[in-house]
Image (cartoon, rainbow, N blue to C red; front, side):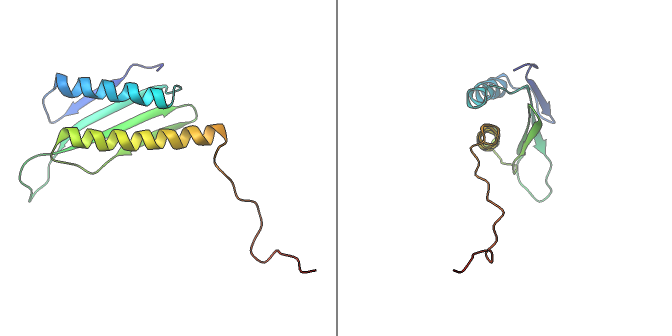
Length: 119
């Protein structure tokens, strides 16, 4: 990665265990797509009225050549579950992006249903 990993905690105290887990997850993303230029991860506590306990949201912004991939999943009561869901979605987006860059994505021709010739 060209830029250092940025990890931000909002409305929750800094946790070395959560930060360590994020670093490991980002290393796995780099194995999926080695051309990641930068990555920002925001872990925040979401304030919801009518809800018991805290909800945690994890947002991931990944900068790759020619695009920026953004993952923002639904909040969850467990910060580790929220991280898992967000990083799983980020992995899927990176795999899709890598496929597009390699040209593995099929494109449909310009034929319509009514263009068949009858001989």
